[in-house]
Amino acid sequence: MQFIDLGAQYKILEERISSRISKVLNHGQYIMGPEVSELETRLSKFVGVKHAITCANGTDALQLCLMSLGIGEGDVVFCPTFTFFATAEVISLSGATPIFVDSDSSFNICSIDLERRIEYVKSQNIGRVAAVISVDLFGLPADYTKLHDIAKKFNLKIIEDAAQGFGGEINGRRAGSFGDVATTSFFPAKPLGCYGDGGAIFTNDDALASLIRSLRVHGKGNTKYDNVRIGLNSRLDTIQAAILLEKLEEFPNELKVRNEIASTYSNALKEHYRVPSIANGFFSSWAQYTLCSDKREDLMSKLKANGIPSMIYYEKCMHQQKAFDSLKDINSNYPNAESFSKSVFSLPMHPYLSQVDIDLIINELLGN
Ligand SMILES: *Cc1c(COP(=O)(O)O)cnc(C)c1O
Image (tube, rainbow, N blue to C red; front, side, top):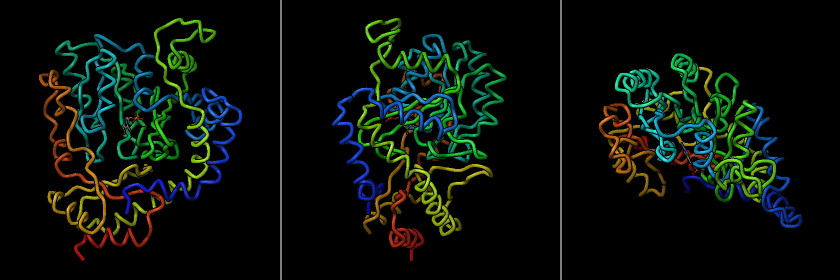
C-alpha cells in the first residue's frame, strides 16, 4: 500500500498525458508554450479569480507574492507556526520578520492568537504590520471570515497559501480566491500535482498580476531583454503545464472521492480518535487525513508492521526550527501547535485507495 499512489492515477491518465507531452515535443516551445497560457485560463476559471499566473514551485509563488506587495526589511509578516517550512522561510528571505501564530482546533491559524500577536508587535515596535500568510493546512481553507475582519482592522494584506488547500471551498467559493493574493504548489504529492516542480499565483488585482508576470521573468518590461526591476526566473515548464491540463480534468472527480474516503475514515474512527473537524460550509481537498493520538508512535509501528504507511506532518513547529533560533525572543507560547506536533499522524489518502485498503487501515486502528 502506498501513502499517495501516483502510479495508480498515471495508469488511468497514461494515454492522455502521453499525447499531451508529445504535442509539446513536436511544437518545441518548451518554455512559455501555448499549454502554459491554456492552463492559466483553466486555473483562473476553476478558482474563480481574474488572474492565474503559473511559476516554478509553491515556494517561489509565495516569494513572488511578497515581492509584488513590496514586503521586505522593516515589515512583519504573520504565519502559522504549524505549517510546512516554506511558508515561513519566504518571509525571512524577503528580509521581513516572521511572527508565528498558534493554531486552533481546525489545525489552521488561530484568529484570536493572530490578533493578540498583532497588538504585541505594535506595542513592542517590532516592525510595520504588513501581511499574514494564512495556510489552508491539510486541504481545509482557513477561516477567512475572521481573517478578513482582522485584515481590515489592522490594514493587513492576506496571502493565502493554498499549496495544500487547492480544491477546497467555503460556501462554494474555492481556495485560492480568499487572499488579496494566493498561491498553490503542483509538487507531485499535493492534491493537484505535476511530474516535477510547479506552482501558481491567484489574484483579482490587475496591477498585482502584471507586476507578478514581470517578476517571474527577471523583472521584464516590454520585452524579455528589457529589465525594469529585479525579479526571478520562475516559470512553469510547458511539459508540466501539459500534464496539469489532463490532471485538472480528473481533479473534480478526485476531490469527490477524497471526501468519500475521509467520511468513511471519520465515521469509523470518530469514537476512538480525534478526527478532523470540518466546519459547516467548509469543504476540504484532503491533502492529508490527520488524526491525533498520544499513542502515535505505537499506532504508527503497528500500521507499519501491517504494510500500512503513515506520516507525521509536522513533527516540528516553525518556532522550534533551528533556522529560526534568532527569533525566539519574539516568538514563544504555542500550546495548541506544540500539542499537535506531538500527537498528529496522517493516514494514506489519495483518490485511488481501494476499499480493501481502507477497511484494513480502519481495522488496524480499531484494534480488530
Ligand atoms: C508544499 C508546500 C509549499 C511549498 O511548495 P513547493 O512547490 O514544494 O515549493 C508551501 N506551503 C505549504 C503549506 C506547502 O505544503
